[in-house]
Amino acid sequence: MSDVLDLTDKVALVTGGTRGLGYAMAHAFADHGADVIVASRKADACERVAAEIAAKGRRSLGVPCHVGHWDQVTALAETAYDAFGRVDILVNNAGLSPLYPSLAQVTEELFDKVVGINLKGPFRLSALVGERMAAGDGGSIINISSTAAEQPSPEAEPYGAAKAGINSLTRSLAFAYGPTVRANTIEAGPFLTDISKAWDMAAFEARAKESMALGRGGRPDEIVGAALYLASDASSFTTGAVIRVDGGARL
Ligand SMILES: NC(=O)c1ccc[n+]([C@@H]2O[C@H](COP(=O)([O-])OP(=O)(O)OC[C@H]3O[C@@H](n4cnc5c(N)ncnc54)[C@H](OP(=O)(O)O)[C@@H]3O)[C@@H](O)[C@H]2O)c1
Image (cartoon, rainbow, N blue to C red; front, side):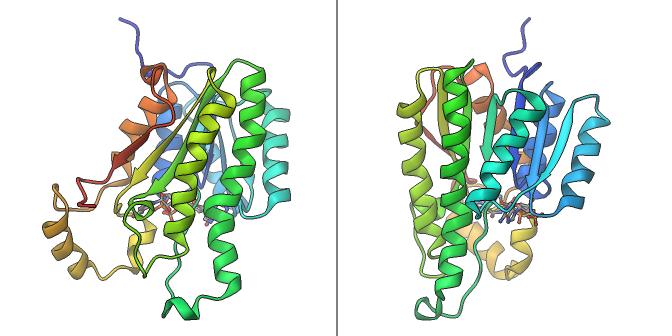
């Protein structure tokens, strides 16, 4: 029986692929046959994860890149195409949501950083890669958003606004580069990654029992099913969609 999730001969590019959800997705793609380019800010982390994936018998390359910097994103796309000649799966996963004392104390620097990493970088990389996918064999763009896009909170702005922006961007990409390129959003709920280390876990667990159907935060590997579905032919009729992977969070 053919494996509808098979990614043999595909090349995946995952930003923020060195930790958390990106790390889980990068390994899952490799486990299903893809070669994987891993990008994050830290060169040593990129090299370490690329070596892990290479040890599985896949081609892999770690590329240091701060996705909030336009020129670094341009360079990432160039490096990916120079090294592999193609990108079939792009996952815009790198993101962050820094804490701040109050909305009025959000600095211009923090605002620009959050919007830069969560929205500007994905826009630039999707345009560069999407255009080449459309001119070639097509592909799948997966943008990692957040339930904060639909349930904005005063504690997580401009993050929520940037993630709402990526939801909108995804639909535009589906039309810009379709029909051969599909673009979809995964809206993540709370996952227990490095991000959650800053949370008051007792308060989080109490809140999760009240407000989430599954009553708990997700494990990083629990993003993998949705990512494999969207990356592979299993989702051949799915584009411009938002898939919530959030443990049934009440929005
Ligand atoms: N965890 C959650 O509860 C949750 C909920 C909703 C949505 N999300 C979204 O899911 C995505 C992944 O989150 P996560 O929890 O897996 O985060 P994480 O564990 O903190 O990992 C973040 C990854 O992104 C990289 N990164 C951070 N800033 C970067 C930058 N400027 N340029 C390039 N890479 C950068 C990090 O590596 P370096 O440090 O080496 O750069 C790391 O590989 C994010 O978009 C986040 O907004 C997460």
